[in-house]
Image 1 (cartoon, rainbow, N blue to C red):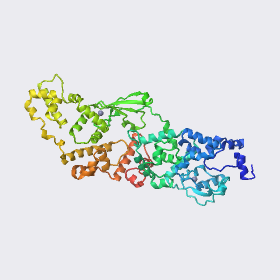
Image 2: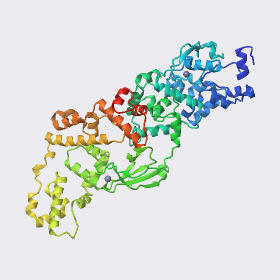
Image 3: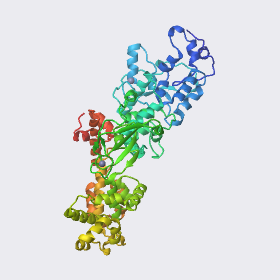
Image 4: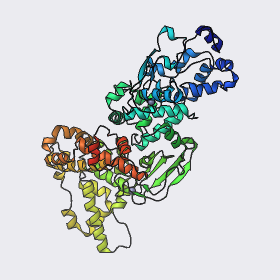
Length: 597
Ligand SMILES: [Zn+2]
Ligand SMILES: [Zn+2]
């Protein structure tokens, strides 16, 4: 078919001359498909999926938004498409010229006798060829020249002869992103933005990038993300993360339901070790048991079996208060601690999440009374040790010290009636000594009131011993304002040691062992910062505990490998590099640590 001029061709095909040629997301496709010869077998749906960039955007739009964009493209509302789809607001620089891959051009020319414009070469931010990985080159055909608004420009007219084309991939990350874009352009899926958010959430959980209260560890995410891609690379594709508090990354993974540029979604997927294909597949994997397989861990921090899998059974129920999500109840047989969790578990890591504590159990309560009675650690420090917030500590301390004392009494004294006199003597002496130890701040009258059975028995049968073992008032050193630094040093040494162990045993992505991290975990950072010179033992221990960046990296590497092993995966060298987020280290470094490529 021949047209007298481009204007006439435009009018014939689109029903008006008053339009502009658009490369990625054109409109008036219903009109066009009706006017094309039927023999071509092209309907408007095929035009959209095979000849526009919409399939690349589709999985990253909400169902509604996609529907509206599609309607605009089929109809004559082309002007609204680009703003709806998030390109305008994204800050990803749009292309100035149509681009090509020199290797593809040579291949096309020898295969078809001419080259053509490829969709995947003309996506902003995808700067290398999806087939060869080499850097895409600008043609001389500008997007913005007025004269091209109507024109139909064959690639052959704008791409020069190419003598030598270097097919070496320029950057492996960019190459992977380009391949993923290509896959999306050529595979239609029903997934939408909500599905993607589910994928991100699962990946964040798996990486230990969410907290127990389900919020995202943004800073950690950002720093590993930047480590993975390098700031330079992110900068070249207009995706740098500058303001830590409000980056596109935090908004995107946070699920803001705003359209983001597909390039950014691809960056996130690739960072998590996914391709769009594997991500969509992972959505179909069922989670059969809402809480996985038992046994489950006791999550009482002060239980001797803390974080060990000792809970054999889990009671699952559903409630309309949780919108029918399953609720599991877990009780430790050793310490009586029980907790509930709302399921289903999103990842292995969810095993360590508590939605609510039901019972604290006797070990926890005893430890609380002990810690409180010592009057040395701050409320915050105690709450850290016990794994609950300070208000909970306060509430339970009051309950136990005032009215609920009976449970403590019961535990401390043995009331078995069948005991003979010697047993009774031993038992009451034991109770009394323990009472003095647990309540060092109490005078004899308070102790007598609280442990009346033991006191009365000893007073009648063992008076001499009792008077020898009565607390002297002057021993209450912690009431005075004088600070005993050696005593503090000893206590802090223990607190620091325990905090370090907790950090090391965390299931999540390893935190660097710094003075700050240890101090915060032990809830004694200010005193460490101000008075470390008066705490020689603690200072010495800290010197050993604090970790260099290198040591930290080794630990992250090990963590990645262990995590994969736990999931039954055998990773290749490059996958380990990717997952560990340590891409900045040279290959040699990995090899030195036993990773084979
Ligand atoms: Zn190519
Ligand atoms: Zn326990």
